Image 1 (tube, rainbow, N blue to C red):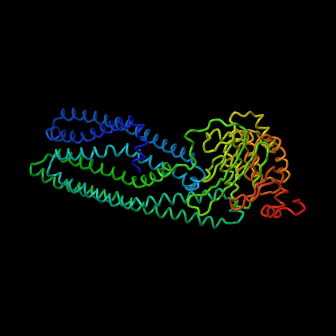
Image 2 (cartoon, rainbow, N blue to C red; image 1 turned 45 degrees about the vertical axis):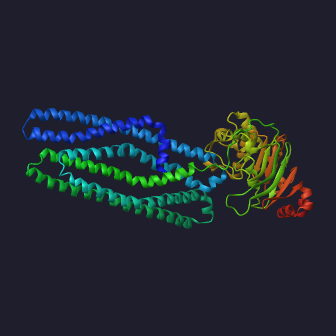
Image 3 (cartoon, rainbow, N blue to C red; image 1 turned 90 degrees about the vertical axis):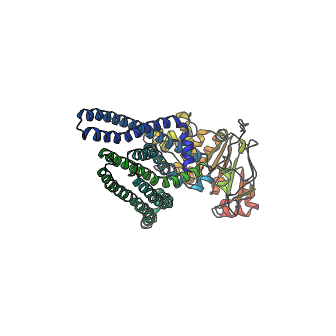
Length: 577
């Protein structure tokens, strides 16, 4: 997964990577050449007392060192830019994929996990790419080059390398093998910490209202302790890495000096050659250490890559049409024919064989008990998810064949939980129509019964709105969401229990103003309050996902027991009549 992910997103950067590899090759060759020059200076300059030889070759060493520094700086620069670009591209790919998801896929992954995958997981892969460009590219060149040059200096002494390299490889391999499952557990527990923290921040008022501070502290303490436990486990494994490597390095250095001294004493080796051999040994071991450092990162990055690929390879259940309809008659005729919806793996469908017709100039209301499928029914129209059975038609055209932007302009939805974005009142209202004038915004606010409180805010339309609209009340949030849809001016208005936070007087005034504003549009209202929908032209009664009655208020009161029970649970017999 990791290799496939990197190969896909590194493909556009072949030229920078090629230049980076060339720079790494030059700087590594320069690094490998320096010990040979140093040995030459010792054997032919220092031992013989030839100052001119020392100065000339010393100048050459300085020149090669400058080449090494320049190439290294260039390699790190291009490596950092390329790794950052790859991280940016992967984040953008995840974002684009998540934006295409329906409510079903978002619910499957969960918001905390999607946030972790977009941020922390991508960061781990990006860091691995950076370390690969800056360390791993030069490590094999240095290791192989060091071994070859060490063999060229003294073959018998090179036998030490036969013991050092395999021991290091086995030790590192065993540790890396233990790290992979620990890193997978770490990412899952990081998801849990994010989820708990997100719940506690979002539900802060509920926690305080029920005085559950101690309980929530314990929840977070447990999630944090679980993450700490697995982090300590990985830390212990990583802590073993460098002591093992350094032990092997020091033992091998002692062995080289010991056997090298005997070789020099026997006349089979020069002092400069031993110095160079020690330098090459250190370079070989350092390259192994660099590879070791990379291997420490690979297991976690591999787990993160799998989680990223899981998102990127998940297809949305809401598929854009291959040959989209680009134009509708713009009448706003809405019809559901035998529409049904079932979540994957669910025993029972949420909706079953729903038939519904909503006409322009009329208000159609949907009412039912909690869990009867009212919000799901509305979600089928703008394709928050697609019907698994039957059809949803707008102006006689199946919504699955309509171009998504055209459908978004035709259908305006005010969701059950209105969400406002960080910005201002104006930026939130223009979410429905970026080209709307201030006059149009004020008109929409007036219809939504929100003009009064917006005028009372400092800066009016430019008053700041916090993320989620947390700096305004629930009723104000609902009215701003309704105004946002009014600015859009669609042919079909869908109100999903959008008046629940309003007092009865505001509710009545808003419905009266809406009736005038949407006189020629199709209006579908889902509501729990009978008073909100009793004057609708058509009332559809849902029970356990089925339509059990359709008609006007007085008709349903006379012959529909389900509707009658709902009404009498809120009103007296006299009020209902």
